[in-house]
Length: 184
Ligand SMILES: [Zn+2]
Image (tube, rainbow, N blue to C red):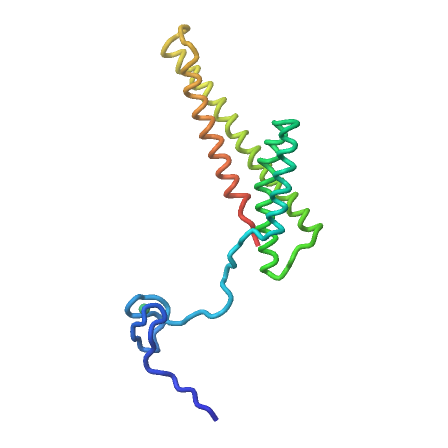
């Protein structure tokens, strides 16, 4: 029968310092003395050729629409491209977990992602509009106090536009944080 002998000392796999084998962490560099052997916890995510073709096709369609109806094309591009990228990550995640998606599921995932992008855009616009309105009222009030009837409207603009931008960015930021991460 083979006997397994445990060495009294091991070399740290990170810095090669000699450590008593009973220790869990290296006395020299503090990193764990055990090495994890197996697949990486997160596979590097790259766009494969198929995904890239889809992305190019989608952008081509959106650019085609842009030529005919510019506003609609830009709008489609702003929704569809982030949605498709999020779908790729989602599909890759499912595949890593051993639950590959099939076509109807992939289409459903894309629709869900498009919905999320749409909500984020809508929220950002609503945030802008609300902060803009508040800024306009505050600006008008400030102007009335400072200049009376002689105001030229600049105070309103100075208050409403930056406030609107801050409101839009904040609303967009919180919505992205809440909706964008793909939950398992
Ligand atoms: Zn070490």
